[in-house]
Image (cartoon, rainbow, N blue to C red):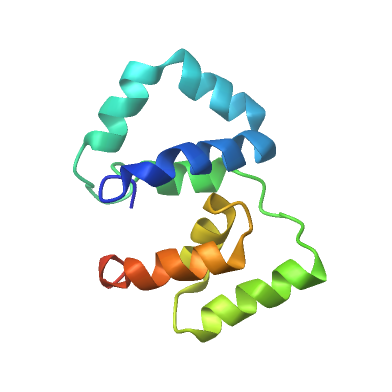
Amino acid sequence: MVQANPQILQPMLQELGKQNPELVRLVQGHQAEFLRLINEPGEGEEGNVLGQLAASMPQGIQVTPEEHEAIERLEAMGFDHAIVLQVFFACNKNEELAANYLLDHMHEFDD
């Protein structure tokens, strides 16, 4: 997802920093290697840097009832739960921005 949309990297790292500051420090300390990894073509689980980052994040992210409803509305548009969560948090929990991003890039989410 980052390879196709490099502009989402910074918001994703910012959200990751809120959830797992140690991982962001690790990324910052090894920027060249991190950039090499995210620019490699995906090769199953080993090449899936975003999947590895997501796996290292705490699984219990808390959202308000309003945020939960926004996530459900985005999912009701036909998007996968995992994609909705990534985009919603990358857009700083802005439902309108997330919806626009999802609609503008929907062709990239097809498997």
